[in-house]
Image 1: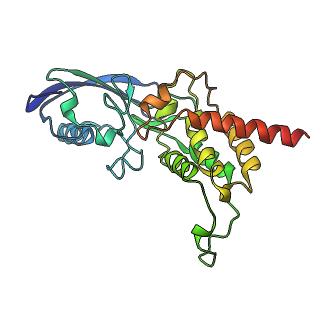
Image 2 (image 1 turned 60 degrees about the vertical axis):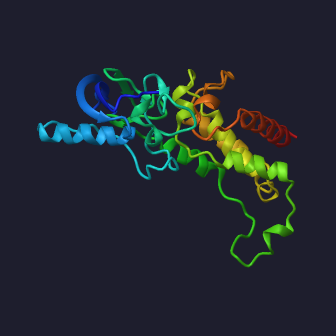
Image 3 (image 1 turned 135 degrees about the vertical axis):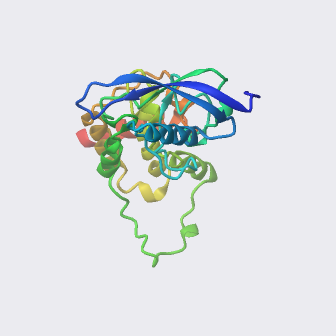
Length: 256
C-alpha cells in the first residue's frame, strides 16, 4: 500500500481515433495526485490538464462510479480493472500505485469489443447475447400469486443470486487469452437455470445464447481461470460448468 500523500506519475495511455484508425500509446506526466483519489478522478484531472493545454482529452467510459454498472472498464498495468481484486475501475484508488510509477492504461482487447475511441470499446455484443436469450414467460405483471408460493431451495436461490451479480463489464473477456465470454454467458444462463421461473424457456435460452456468443466472435474457454480471478463480482467458474450441462441437455433433447 502507498503511504505517500501525493504522487507524481507517468501515464502510458492508448489513443485511437476510431476502430478503423491505427492506435498508439502516448505518454503523459501528471503531478501532485492525491493517493486518496479514485482512478477516474485522476483521469478527470489529466483531461482538465489536456484541455487547458488545448489538447484532445482522453476518451473513457463511465457512469455510476459506484461499481454497479461496469461502464468504467479499463485494462490497467496488465490487469482488468487494475491492481486490486473484487472492484471495478471506478473503485480503484491511487493509493494502490507508487510515486514515480508508469501506469499503462488500455481498452479491453477483443475482436468482439471494437474500439470506439481511445479507451472506450463497443460492448454491445453482450446486449445481443442477452437479447438472444429472451425473457421468461412467467407472468410478472403484479397480479400473480405471492412469489413465496413457489418454493426455491435456499442453496439454489443463493447460487442464482451470485450469478445475477454479473454486471456485464467484460473483464472476463479482457483477461482471457482466448477472448472467451463463457463466464458472462454462464452467469446469465445460471441465473435462470437455477430458478423454476426460468425452466420454461431453459433449452431455447441456452442454445440461442451460446450461438449468439459464437456468432459475435468470442473465443472458447480452456478453463484457465483468469476470468474468475479478475471478475469484480467474483462470479464462479461453476457457472460455466452449469451452462455446459444445460447446453448439452438442450442439444441432446433437440436431436431426439
